[in-house]
Each structure stands twice: as C-alpha cells, then as structure tokens.
Image (tube, rainbow, N blue to C red; front, side, top):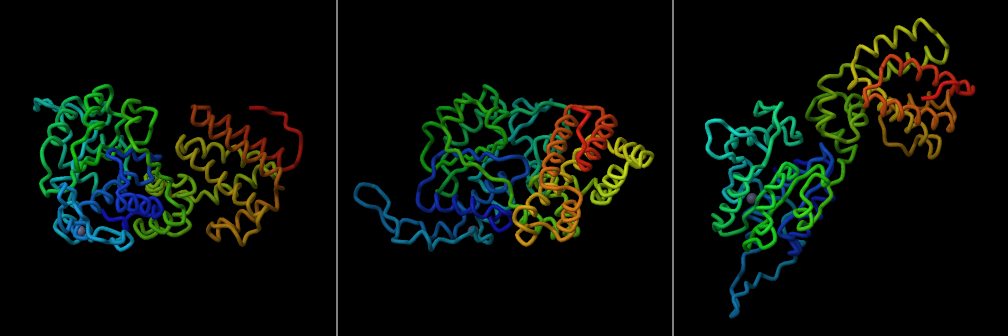
Length: 402
Ligand SMILES: [Zn+2]
C-alpha cells in the first residue's frame, strides 16, 4: 500500500512522514479513527514507507562516530521521497503483506486443531482481507474467517508471540514494525505487552489501529502517542468511488452523504441500494404538503417494507439535503460543494421552507433517526413525521409531540 492509493488523507499522511523524517516518532502509535476512514490503510502505507529501500538509502549512516552514534548524511528531510517507491524488494514484500519485519496482530478465534491461538493461524485470510477489504471492520473480518457469530480476541498466546518476535533482531537490519489491528479486542491479556510497549527494543515501532479508545485497556492507551485519523474528505471519497465502483457522481455523492464519509458504509450502500432517494423524497414531500392521504398511506407502506437500515439511509439523505439548503440560505449556491442535482433539489426545498422551517425539519429528522436506531415502529414514526412535515411547512402549530 502506498500513500497515493489512500483517498482523502493527504494531510495526516504528510504529518506522519514529517514525524518520521524528523525522528519525532514515538515507539507506540495509536491510530484512532471512525470506521471506514482508512486508518488501517494508513498504517500499511506508513509501514511500507518506513521500510522502503529508496527512503532508507537517504537515511543510511555514512560513518559511525567514536561514541557509537551513527552520523546521518547531511540531508534535508524535505528531500526524502514523498511516498514509498513501490518497486524495491522491500516495497514489493510489504505490498504482498509478507515483509519479514512487518508483523500483524488481529482478533481471531480458537482453532480446534491448533494448540495455540495466534493471529498467524489466519495469515492467508488476513492477507486476502487486506487486499480486498482494507476499509472493512471487525464484523467483515470475522465473516471472512467464517466465525461472524463468535467473539474474536487477541489472545494471551498472541501477546506472548509478539514478545517472542520482538526479542529477535530484525531481518533487514532495520526497523521492526507491528501493526496491531483492533487493540480493543486485547482484553486484560494485553497487560502482558505493557513492559514491551514501555521499554521496546531499539528500532521497534508498534502501530495500534483502533476505532474506539474507550474499549482499550487504559494502561495501554496511556503509553501510546495518539494520532487521530479524520474522516475521509468527501470530495476525494466521491472521486474514488466514481472511479473504483464505476457509478455515477450522483450515486457516489448520495452514498458518501448518507455514510458521513465512511468508505466501508458508502460501498455497502451502493451495493444494496438501487433506490433513488431524491425521487422517493419528492414523492413524500408532495403527498405530505398536499395532504394526499391515500398516497401517504401507500408511501409509508413502501417505506415500512424497506427495513431499518434503508429507512435510516433515507432520513440521513433528507437531512443532508436539508443541510445543503440551509447553507444555500446563508452563503448562496455558488459556495456549496455538492452535485448539481443535489443543489437543484435543495433550491426547490428552499421554495417550500424558510430557514426556520428547515431547521425544524432537520431537528425532526434527527429525532426520527434516533428513534429508528432504537427500534421504533417505522409505520407510526413515518405517519407522525408526515403530519409534522405538513404542519411545519404550512406553519401550523404542532399538535403531535414525539
Ligand atoms: Zn521501496
């Protein structure tokens, strides 16, 4: 994996490279991000960057001083390559996830046939997962190893194996790296690692890749250098999805808006949605505003059939368009980043609802998403919401409360 393959994370990639090139890296980094932001991809690209022979050529000591400290050639860190070369033997092995100095730990379950439960038992599946689903979550991974109904774990055996591996010298006489994916699955076994993390052997780097800092042992978190990975920038994610999933810009933009920049979820949405939410929404608004009761009932029946996930997607998409129209109210349509179709639709929304009305609608949508997530009865919820829309748009006093 190279940095250039990762959409929308140039800023954090630049920060990582700068830290490495100015020797400001701690021994243990904790990459923290929301699902689908690309933290694992960044860890892979960063590890490859650090082992790339082209980069290390610039950093090879020219001689050793009397006191045993290496003298690095006088080189401006700005001249170091901006990415791994992708071609040297180190890069090629890193790209295949078989570099002898880049190790991986990840949650697994016990295999009946094995005496020890270590991550490496699933190395083949892991490499496939990294190749095909680097934005996947733990559920995707457990599905990949066909144990999605069991709880994965990074076991005590695995921790002992990490300690063993890191007591050995590196193969390439350079850095030894551990990418530990999902330290939240370490449970208290993780404490075995504390001494290693606190006093690591020289030239060791641990990269912990997590989605939930609250679930990691506090003893581990306190020993890490925290690196927050932001969500992927929307425009970059839309570009990537258009290119990789071969969908229209409108579809990509809709999926990115609904998923709030979560690459994994955006792909999922595209996979199981043929819905054109704009059409669904304009029908609903029409039926609601004009009080076409029998059409409303039919529309709600259809919506009810779609299931909770899609209902949530629909509401989030409506919320996204409501936010665009509020921004148009404030800064005008020229300064909005959205597709033309979204802007056109949002402009039509402005014609039926003022800024205050739009705020009221947005607040109702947020409530509805909250209740759908908590298993509210969808039929009742959409009935109530239809009536609320009618009242908000016709500026009548609300009778119904949630
Ligand atoms: Zn290279």
